[in-house]
Length: 143
Image 1 (cartoon, rainbow, N blue to C red):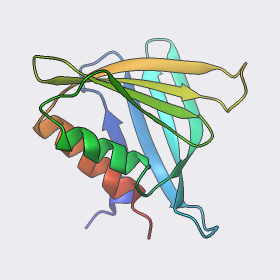
Image 2 (image 1 turned 90 degrees about the vertical axis):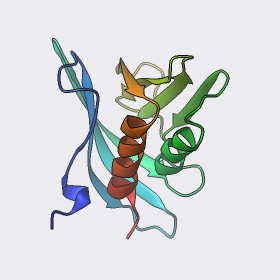
Image 3 (image 1 turned 120 degrees about the horizontal axis):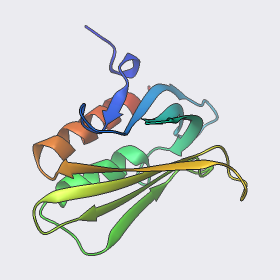
Image 4 (image 1 turned 180 degrees about the horizontal axis):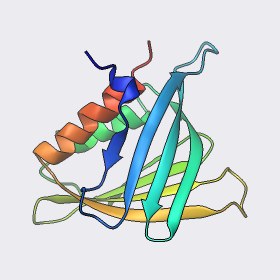
């Protein structure tokens, strides 16, 4: 059986112009539930890669994704998750037609003048979002 940590999480449809990949998750062994992983953004004329550190647990990326699934019928405003060193920011907004729009920003680092690349991805709020949340959870599970 293939190790879920070896399979990149693809955020975006195969036919989309831009996509985000999350891959190579490794626990950062320091007594906390930190997980390091790589975030990539690809699009026409754009290839950006950043190392990301997530504090998994109740405020982690996996929990954030799961909260979107739990509230699949909708929420008001924009929900945001941000990596502890700011290399990945995800804003999620629910539309009245049953979609979740994710705006993903990958940054070189925490510095104000660091490069950043932002892409938007639209997901169906039911199965498609649930599948993504399961894949993120499998990738980031601390072992």
